[in-house]
Length: 266
Image (cartoon, rainbow, N blue to C red; front, side):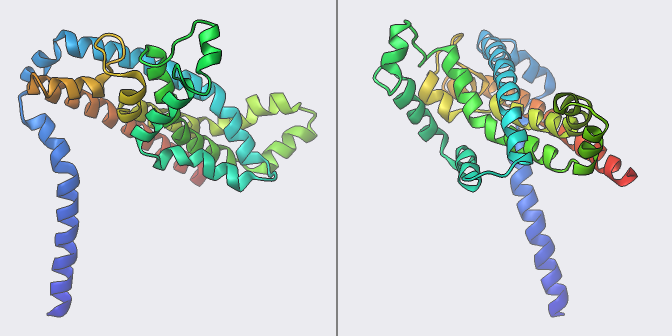
Protein backbone atom coordinates (compact mmCIF):
# COMPACT_ATOMS: atom_id res chain seq x y z
CA UNK A 1 0.00 0.00 0.00
CA UNK A 2 2.76 2.44 0.95
CA UNK A 3 4.61 1.47 -2.22
CA UNK A 4 1.59 2.33 -4.37
CA UNK A 5 1.15 5.65 -2.58
CA UNK A 6 4.83 6.42 -3.18
CA UNK A 7 4.44 5.58 -6.89
CA UNK A 8 1.36 7.81 -7.17
CA UNK A 9 3.17 10.70 -5.49
CA UNK A 10 6.19 10.15 -7.75
CA UNK A 11 4.09 10.14 -10.94
CA UNK A 12 2.01 13.10 -9.74
CA UNK A 13 5.16 15.15 -9.14
CA UNK A 14 6.38 14.35 -12.67
CA UNK A 15 3.05 15.32 -14.22
CA UNK A 16 2.94 18.49 -12.14
CA UNK A 17 6.38 19.76 -13.11
CA UNK A 18 5.97 18.80 -16.80
CA UNK A 19 2.61 20.58 -16.92
CA UNK A 20 4.04 23.63 -15.18
CA UNK A 21 6.93 23.87 -17.66
CA UNK A 22 4.96 23.21 -20.84
CA UNK A 23 1.50 24.72 -20.28
CA UNK A 24 2.58 28.41 -20.19
CA UNK A 25 4.48 27.95 -23.44
CA UNK A 26 1.69 25.95 -25.06
CA UNK A 27 -0.85 28.60 -24.06
CA UNK A 28 0.86 31.07 -26.37
CA UNK A 29 -0.28 29.01 -29.35
CA UNK A 30 -3.81 28.12 -28.16
CA UNK A 31 -4.80 31.59 -26.92
CA UNK A 32 -5.57 32.62 -30.50
CA UNK A 33 -6.11 30.85 -33.80
CA UNK A 34 -3.19 30.60 -36.23
CA UNK A 35 -4.96 33.05 -38.54
CA UNK A 36 -5.20 35.64 -35.77
CA UNK A 37 -1.55 35.14 -34.81
CA UNK A 38 -0.45 35.65 -38.42
CA UNK A 39 -2.65 38.73 -38.69
CA UNK A 40 -1.12 40.23 -35.55
CA UNK A 41 2.37 39.54 -36.88
CA UNK A 42 1.53 41.68 -39.91
CA UNK A 43 2.41 44.89 -38.09
CA UNK A 44 5.23 47.40 -38.38
CA UNK A 45 6.32 46.66 -34.80
CA UNK A 46 6.72 42.94 -35.46
CA UNK A 47 8.27 43.42 -38.90
CA UNK A 48 10.89 45.90 -37.75
CA UNK A 49 11.78 43.81 -34.70
CA UNK A 50 12.02 40.61 -36.76
CA UNK A 51 14.22 42.26 -39.38
CA UNK A 52 16.55 43.71 -36.75
CA UNK A 53 16.70 40.43 -34.81
CA UNK A 54 17.63 38.45 -37.91
CA UNK A 55 20.26 40.97 -38.97
CA UNK A 56 21.89 41.28 -35.56
CA UNK A 57 21.83 37.59 -34.69
CA UNK A 58 23.35 36.60 -38.03
CA UNK A 59 26.17 39.06 -37.39
CA UNK A 60 26.50 37.91 -33.78
CA UNK A 61 26.68 34.22 -34.65
CA UNK A 62 29.23 34.92 -37.38
CA UNK A 63 31.42 36.80 -34.89
CA UNK A 64 31.03 34.05 -32.29
CA UNK A 65 31.97 31.27 -34.71
CA UNK A 66 35.01 33.13 -36.04
CA UNK A 67 36.41 34.24 -32.69
CA UNK A 68 35.27 31.55 -30.25
CA UNK A 69 36.06 28.44 -32.33
CA UNK A 70 39.85 28.89 -32.03
CA UNK A 71 39.45 29.48 -28.29
CA UNK A 72 37.33 26.33 -27.93
CA UNK A 73 39.95 24.32 -29.81
CA UNK A 74 42.73 25.70 -27.63
CA UNK A 75 40.80 24.92 -24.43
CA UNK A 76 40.01 21.40 -25.61
CA UNK A 77 43.40 20.31 -26.93
CA UNK A 78 45.87 22.06 -24.62
CA UNK A 79 46.80 22.22 -20.95
CA UNK A 80 48.31 25.39 -19.55
CA UNK A 81 48.74 27.29 -16.31
CA UNK A 82 45.60 29.06 -15.20
CA UNK A 83 43.30 26.98 -17.41
CA UNK A 84 40.88 26.20 -14.56
CA UNK A 85 40.58 29.87 -13.63
CA UNK A 86 40.02 30.81 -17.28
CA UNK A 87 37.29 28.17 -17.56
CA UNK A 88 35.42 29.66 -14.60
CA UNK A 89 35.74 33.19 -15.99
CA UNK A 90 34.47 32.12 -19.41
CA UNK A 91 31.44 30.45 -17.84
CA UNK A 92 30.61 33.42 -15.66
CA UNK A 93 28.38 35.10 -18.29
CA UNK A 94 26.08 32.06 -18.13
CA UNK A 95 25.15 32.74 -14.51
CA UNK A 96 25.52 36.53 -14.53
CA UNK A 97 22.19 38.42 -14.46
CA UNK A 98 21.58 39.92 -17.89
CA UNK A 99 20.86 43.36 -16.42
CA UNK A 100 24.26 43.25 -14.71
CA UNK A 101 25.87 42.41 -18.04
CA UNK A 102 24.18 45.43 -19.61
CA UNK A 103 25.42 47.71 -16.84
CA UNK A 104 28.92 46.28 -17.20
CA UNK A 105 28.94 46.90 -20.95
CA UNK A 106 27.86 50.49 -20.33
CA UNK A 107 30.65 50.94 -17.78
CA UNK A 108 33.19 49.80 -20.35
CA UNK A 109 31.88 51.16 -23.66
CA UNK A 110 29.72 54.08 -22.52
CA UNK A 111 30.77 57.70 -23.08
CA UNK A 112 32.15 57.83 -19.54
CA UNK A 113 33.22 54.20 -19.53
CA UNK A 114 36.67 52.66 -19.38
CA UNK A 115 37.02 52.74 -23.17
CA UNK A 116 34.63 55.62 -23.82
CA UNK A 117 37.39 58.20 -24.17
CA UNK A 118 39.33 56.10 -26.66
CA UNK A 119 36.20 55.42 -28.71
CA UNK A 120 35.26 59.11 -28.77
CA UNK A 121 38.59 59.89 -30.44
CA UNK A 122 37.39 57.84 -33.42
CA UNK A 123 33.91 59.37 -33.13
CA UNK A 124 32.43 56.01 -32.17
CA UNK A 125 29.32 55.86 -30.02
CA UNK A 126 28.29 52.29 -29.22
CA UNK A 127 25.54 52.37 -26.54
CA UNK A 128 21.95 52.56 -27.81
CA UNK A 129 22.87 51.53 -31.35
CA UNK A 130 22.55 48.32 -33.36
CA UNK A 131 26.22 47.67 -32.58
CA UNK A 132 25.30 47.51 -28.89
CA UNK A 133 22.61 44.94 -29.71
CA UNK A 134 25.19 42.74 -31.44
CA UNK A 135 27.67 43.15 -28.58
CA UNK A 136 25.07 42.16 -25.99
CA UNK A 137 24.09 39.09 -28.01
CA UNK A 138 27.71 38.05 -28.51
CA UNK A 139 28.44 38.41 -24.80
CA UNK A 140 25.47 36.32 -23.69
CA UNK A 141 25.60 33.62 -26.40
CA UNK A 142 29.36 33.04 -26.64
CA UNK A 143 29.71 30.79 -23.56
CA UNK A 144 27.07 28.38 -24.87
CA UNK A 145 28.83 28.01 -28.20
CA UNK A 146 32.17 27.72 -26.42
CA UNK A 147 30.96 24.80 -24.30
CA UNK A 148 29.47 22.94 -27.27
CA UNK A 149 32.49 23.55 -29.50
CA UNK A 150 34.92 22.54 -26.79
CA UNK A 151 33.09 19.27 -26.17
CA UNK A 152 33.06 18.62 -29.91
CA UNK A 153 36.84 18.99 -30.08
CA UNK A 154 37.46 17.02 -26.88
CA UNK A 155 35.74 13.82 -28.08
CA UNK A 156 37.96 13.52 -31.16
CA UNK A 157 40.29 10.54 -30.87
CA UNK A 158 43.90 11.68 -30.54
CA UNK A 159 45.04 8.62 -32.49
CA UNK A 160 43.27 9.85 -35.62
CA UNK A 161 45.18 13.11 -35.43
CA UNK A 162 48.44 11.29 -34.72
CA UNK A 163 47.98 9.08 -37.79
CA UNK A 164 47.41 12.14 -39.94
CA UNK A 165 50.58 13.75 -38.65
CA UNK A 166 52.67 10.59 -39.15
CA UNK A 167 51.54 10.55 -42.79
CA UNK A 168 53.18 13.92 -43.22
CA UNK A 169 50.05 16.03 -43.18
CA UNK A 170 50.61 19.48 -41.69
CA UNK A 171 48.80 20.57 -38.52
CA UNK A 172 46.77 23.09 -40.52
CA UNK A 173 45.59 20.54 -43.07
CA UNK A 174 44.94 18.00 -40.32
CA UNK A 175 42.61 20.47 -38.67
CA UNK A 176 40.59 21.11 -41.83
CA UNK A 177 40.66 17.53 -43.17
CA UNK A 178 40.22 15.56 -39.92
CA UNK A 179 39.46 17.67 -36.84
CA UNK A 180 36.92 20.09 -38.30
CA UNK A 181 34.75 17.48 -40.11
CA UNK A 182 34.61 15.32 -36.97
CA UNK A 183 33.72 18.29 -34.78
CA UNK A 184 31.25 19.82 -37.24
CA UNK A 185 28.07 18.24 -35.76
CA UNK A 186 28.97 19.58 -32.31
CA UNK A 187 29.82 22.98 -33.76
CA UNK A 188 26.46 23.15 -35.54
CA UNK A 189 24.73 22.20 -32.30
CA UNK A 190 26.52 25.06 -30.56
CA UNK A 191 25.53 27.47 -33.33
CA UNK A 192 21.86 26.50 -32.98
CA UNK A 193 21.87 26.85 -29.19
CA UNK A 194 23.68 30.17 -29.17
CA UNK A 195 21.48 31.48 -31.98
CA UNK A 196 18.35 30.65 -29.98
CA UNK A 197 19.80 32.42 -26.96
CA UNK A 198 20.80 35.48 -29.00
CA UNK A 199 17.29 35.71 -30.43
CA UNK A 200 15.78 35.68 -26.95
CA UNK A 201 18.30 38.01 -25.29
CA UNK A 202 16.51 40.75 -23.37
CA UNK A 203 18.13 42.20 -20.23
CA UNK A 204 21.58 43.12 -21.52
CA UNK A 205 20.12 44.51 -24.74
CA UNK A 206 17.61 46.64 -22.85
CA UNK A 207 20.29 48.11 -20.58
CA UNK A 208 23.04 48.58 -23.17
CA UNK A 209 21.15 49.22 -26.41
CA UNK A 210 17.79 50.55 -25.27
CA UNK A 211 14.39 49.83 -26.75
CA UNK A 212 14.09 52.03 -29.82
CA UNK A 213 11.77 50.73 -32.59
CA UNK A 214 13.55 50.16 -35.87
CA UNK A 215 16.92 50.84 -34.29
CA UNK A 216 17.57 48.62 -31.28
CA UNK A 217 14.21 46.96 -30.64
CA UNK A 218 14.61 43.21 -31.11
CA UNK A 219 11.79 40.64 -30.87
CA UNK A 220 11.94 40.23 -27.06
CA UNK A 221 11.91 44.00 -26.60
CA UNK A 222 9.01 44.27 -29.05
CA UNK A 223 7.06 41.83 -26.87
CA UNK A 224 7.72 44.06 -23.88
CA UNK A 225 6.52 47.13 -25.78
CA UNK A 226 3.47 45.42 -27.29
CA UNK A 227 2.23 44.30 -23.87
CA UNK A 228 1.56 47.95 -23.08
CA UNK A 229 -0.51 48.64 -26.21
CA UNK A 230 -1.62 45.45 -27.98
CA UNK A 231 -1.26 42.18 -26.08
CA UNK A 232 -2.29 40.25 -29.20
CA UNK A 233 0.83 41.40 -31.02
CA UNK A 234 2.93 40.41 -28.00
CA UNK A 235 1.39 36.92 -28.05
CA UNK A 236 1.97 36.59 -31.79
CA UNK A 237 5.63 37.61 -31.52
CA UNK A 238 6.02 35.22 -28.57
CA UNK A 239 4.63 32.40 -30.71
CA UNK A 240 7.09 33.26 -33.46
CA UNK A 241 10.04 33.24 -31.07
CA UNK A 242 8.96 29.95 -29.51
CA UNK A 243 8.55 28.36 -32.94
CA UNK A 244 12.03 29.40 -34.00
CA UNK A 245 13.49 28.19 -30.70
CA UNK A 246 11.70 24.86 -31.07
CA UNK A 247 13.07 24.37 -34.57
CA UNK A 248 16.58 25.20 -33.42
CA UNK A 249 16.33 22.77 -30.50
CA UNK A 250 14.93 20.11 -32.83
CA UNK A 251 17.95 20.68 -35.05
CA UNK A 252 20.22 20.21 -32.02
CA UNK A 253 18.43 16.96 -31.19
CA UNK A 254 18.91 15.65 -34.71
CA UNK A 255 22.59 16.56 -34.62
CA UNK A 256 22.99 14.82 -31.26
CA UNK A 257 21.27 11.69 -32.60
CA UNK A 258 23.54 11.74 -35.64
CA UNK A 259 26.62 11.95 -33.44
CA UNK A 260 25.46 9.08 -31.24
CA UNK A 261 24.74 6.86 -34.24
CA UNK A 262 28.11 7.74 -35.75
CA UNK A 263 29.94 6.85 -32.52
CA UNK A 264 27.97 3.61 -32.17
CA UNK A 265 28.90 2.61 -35.72
CA UNK A 266 32.61 2.80 -34.97
